[in-house]
Length: 297
Image (cartoon, rainbow, N blue to C red; front, side, top):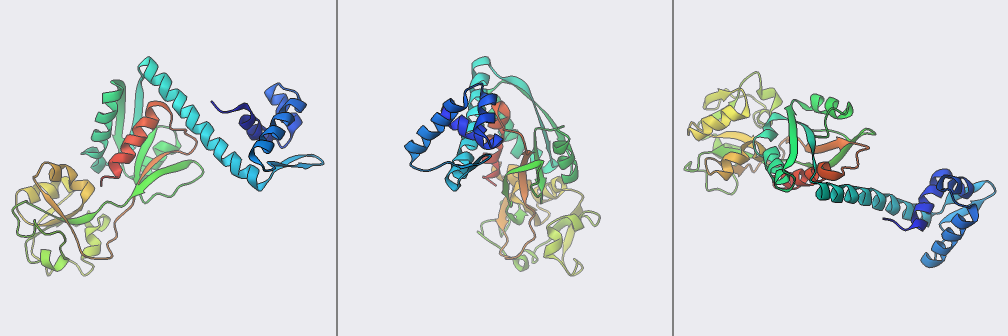
């Protein structure tokens, strides 16, 4: 789908030689060189420095090469997607993610993909971030979601978000209509907090560095779903990210009010794929849908 001259530029740059590139392309060196000269004339810049032994891209050549490789990846993905559409794509997308993403984030993206590709199925397994990374690096998963991950030579971050953190309560709670609340305002009311064996792993820990002895804690829970259930039962106020409570907010069972504290240690959630994957075909479409869902939190 790219002009031949652009593909020649890429091959010559990879081989560092017009002659070697011509051999790979099954063309004569003069034909390849002629195409390069025509392209340089058209663009008005030199793309290669001709050296005694081979060639080297100029600054303009490096700039064009970057664009060519992006175009090539995008055109490959496009062709695969068109083939999928023509043939009625089928197959399995393997997903690894934290459990909290399976409540709304993943199902919404999965539903949207199934509307377009009804023959595609999903294999979803949950785990903490080390398990997510292991599955992606071992190619046991096509797509993953993980917290506080750094990109590397074998791992690509598609996008990252910091879910909004706030107070969660029933819709008829006195603070429910506020656009923002402080921790002090919440502490006037009964509080629902993570259990002692879990609180160190949550954002809530950073809200109470001195401990909870001076607060009116009415209930503790072992996971986000339990805290939400207690809040729905109107036992008090709890603290969660918007991602953890989004389904209840959309259904009108709970309200999420951002906290006014400036420094809250909210983890970063990243959408991940193996570094060398082109994200083509239905997997690429699913990654785009999941990226859009992440943008809503």
